[in-house]
Length: 429
Image (cartoon, rainbow, N blue to C red; front, side):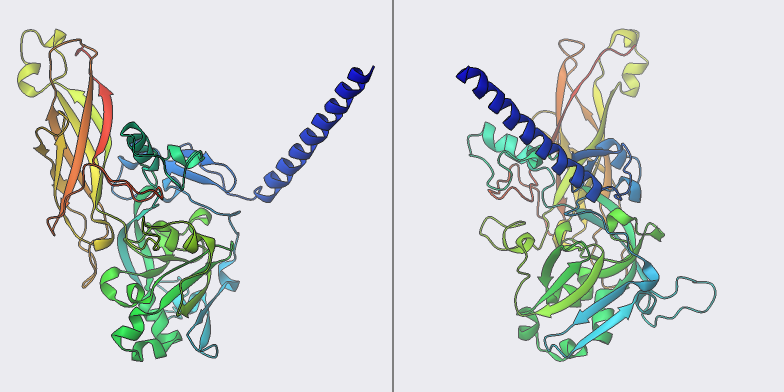
């Protein structure tokens, strides 16, 4: 009888816990019920708050990543904001130095052909990569474990351990230079000397409660292309990407390009938020503020070369080459890509890829768009008709810097080792 009572008590406790969990999940679902729908081009890493990467095959389809396919990294429910009533507050070091701007004061009315635009700030456009600093974390962690290098502090046992290469995209961003907005809002900044500017930070606050910062010099120097943007690929920003206004800091981890922006503040200190103080760190504990040189294989397809297609035994021949397509990016240096090399023998030999140079950036701005490339790489034709192959790629920029074979960051970020993909070849039928 005592045992029966104990079983009943355990059953009640279990049911109580189950009901509590169900109730909490219902509340979470309600909190995120207004989040926008996402297409199946996304690989969902987490539902609430939503986090995804883009399928590499989708990234391979176009030079510019369609807004609906760009990876999403949210930290809270996506705010639904009204552009006409949304305001951006900008504060200087002196608390009395502040200005609140309407969207039309920053970007104009949007009626480009009517002659009624209300902003005096010139609009600009810049093609730039946006990349999460955790991109390829899963690959880095797997390689480090295989080599016996330990595990990541940041992602140990975390779902982000499986992040692939799709937390990246390339878009045409439209808006205004951030420096132009600061010039009319906190003009005192432009009377400071270099040492004073180098000691300051710019804090960005989003309507979702997210906050991050970047060195002020990165925002003031035109060559870094810092912007406030309201359009992506010629259309208003989608909700998931910060409508009606976000920061864009080319070459800087995506975590600093704050979405749903409502406040910018000049500060002697970095943001005190956990996203600045705990996460997105270099191995030495400093805040990540620059992305590394990188390249990715987006697509690979075995094929016969022209000579083999005309041979008598072509129907039974193995594919002898792989057509490989991908992208390369100079990262935070803003350096142009000068060479991409591809290997099918573990790096013993390399084939130079054909590069498709990106559009020229605005005058005085460095290159932050990715470079697309293509190569035909030979693979061994001996052995099984279904044997596998491995393809590697590495990029070199105009400074002569080349991607490292491996890279290990105990914090789990900014992996840029040679990218490797695995495939299978079969008989030409």
